[in-house]
Length: 220
Image (cartoon, rainbow, N blue to C red):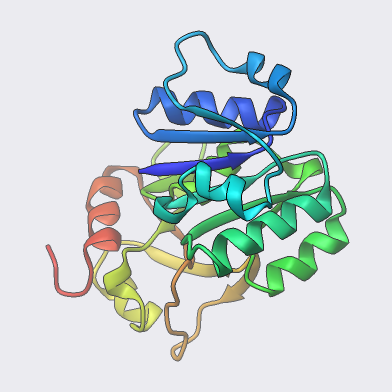
């Protein structure tokens, strides 16, 4: 997949290097050419000098064909503006912005732009939102037998009830994260695009659960 990153500071460079190592196509934008020195020596992606929310710069970075966009510059306003342009103008599906002000981050979460506040940032969290897949462990009991994990669901589940998902797998679903907000499971709760399911299951069932959650209703 093609990923565009705005900002080549420590966060942006770390993301770019990790994505490049995973074999993804990467374009990273920064106003300062010296910032690209943070990229590892074998970096195969593109480096674009320019303003990250400028349409011409975004076009040069291949945003029109991008499947993910991360705005991780040092400015809140620049990050949220770039994220909105990527989503609303270029139609990028997976968009995330780093926001320094936690209160402002909550506002943008409600507008549908996933954000990560600096105080809680890790490269793993950013990667999780750019390339959602599989189960990300949140807790494991002392024996390693039981796991609580955040699990991505495939597009085929969108529009289906959460309880139908639970019936198809050996997992107990606790709650859903939607646009950064936790929602308790109810009989009427319907899965929406971008939802992350938080489920408790036996470690030995992990592969089966990931397959069920990714494949869709009725799949085995």
